[in-house]
Amino acid sequence: MTDTPLLKVRDISKFYGARIGCQNVSFDLWPGEVLAIVGESGSGKTTLLNCLATRLMPTSGAVEYRMRDGQMRDLSRMSEAERRFLMRTDWGFVHQNPADGLRMAVSAGANVGERLMAVGERHYGNIRETAGSWLGRVEISVDRIDDQPRDFSGGMRQRLQIARNLVTSPRLIFMDEPTGGLDVSVQARLLDLLRGLVQDLGLSAIIVTHDLAVARLLSHRMMVMKDGLVIEQGLTDRVLDDPREAYTQLLVSSILQV
Amino acid sequence: MPTPLVVSEVAKSFTMHLRDGLRLPVMSNVTFSVKAGECVVLGGPSGIGKSSLLKMVYGNYAVDSGQILIEHGGRLLDLATADPRTILSVRRATLGYVSQFLRTVPRVAAVDVVAEPLLGRGVDPAEARASAEAMLARLNLPRELWQLPPATFSGGEQQRVNIARGFITDHRILLLDEPTASLDAKNRAVVVGMIEEKKAAGVALLGIFHDEDVREKVADRIVDVSAFSPRKAAA
Image 1 (cartoon, rainbow over the protein chains, first blue to last red):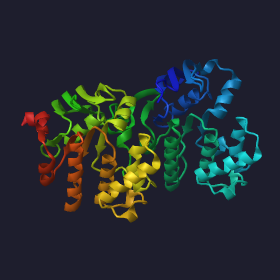
Image 2 (cartoon, one colour):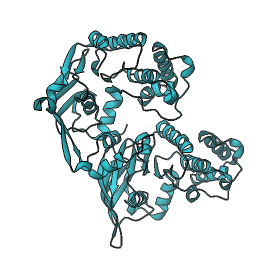
Image 3 (cartoon, each protein chain N blue to C red):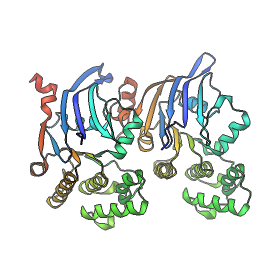
Image 4 (cartoon, rainbow over the protein chains, first blue to last red):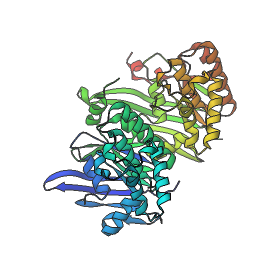
């Protein structure tokens, strides 16, 4: 356990013209920690996630990331090439729609292998072997390695996207509604898989979800957003068991019991 | 050795924003401590706030004021004001909790549910699994269930998985929320034995036991929660 955060977020705001995307968000993310960002549609969760992952430029504020050499670097001061390299190697980004994170017209194996090539792996046999073992880890049968993701079901595509992201042993994963749009049994399988991988690999993750059950299952800590502001944050089970803000109480009391 | 758990002048209320900001005082001036090797039982009628009190100590419920002091990693910490990361580390290493109901995770086998707290502390997976199997065997959970996810288990079977998970570590403080509620006499006796072993090992236990028989066997002291409850003050 190191005693410095992996990610330091200070006063991040994003305005779309006069409209608020997210405002004055600050937090630290520590190694091995999973943070859930919850709130309803339009609350600014995805805007915040995109600002953190450098997919959007925040209007103000700073995000610092601890590089593998231990240096804290301000992401907005990095060159485009450095940011892209970070995205391809040390980070992962799991999109809600797998088609946004996969190349649909190349094989499953190539989708996973491509990220390996980005970190300098050149040996075809090794790449294929690693890709195959990752398919196995996400429970895709290895005999599908040469098939294209457009021939896969939604749940398989999402698992493939996760394999593609994890193959380079990233330290930080961003996830935008990773289980959205999947049916419940497929969701359960994916959640269990994610939970196991996060635990085994000691990953840090930031997960945007509107599903409080997903947040409860996967995250250590959570932030509740409304109208672009973080209105409540803390230990996941405390926020869910003892919500303080009116809006959080409404969210928690709106969960359907099965 | 310092007292493992000291609760001092803790107060707690709920504000129900969906009920026009109705404020429900739950508890005030909660003060007690649990010594190493001691089992303190929370007493009082149903609904007086015994489970709430355990949740405050574990950190599921925030407290309004007061201190919850525990010794963690050679330091004295106030859980009432600790940040989430500190609370997680306290739960991993020092403070265990056997809840009343098992929160099951889809697709995870019973034996892995039990082994998980050990894995979280970096114990070798094979070793953790072996300890988990030993715990489940001791609690008489049929072997053919070990590899199944507990979601479909009966209440008593789930509770035994929950107990195994809570007792598998060497946490210095253990919170027990009616661990024997849905067990038969034979398994209740097993749990009583396990509690006695924890006491002998110097663990501080704080629990709720509705079963008088179990309570009499394990309790060193009873703390009456109604003394902290505003309802009693009103009565």
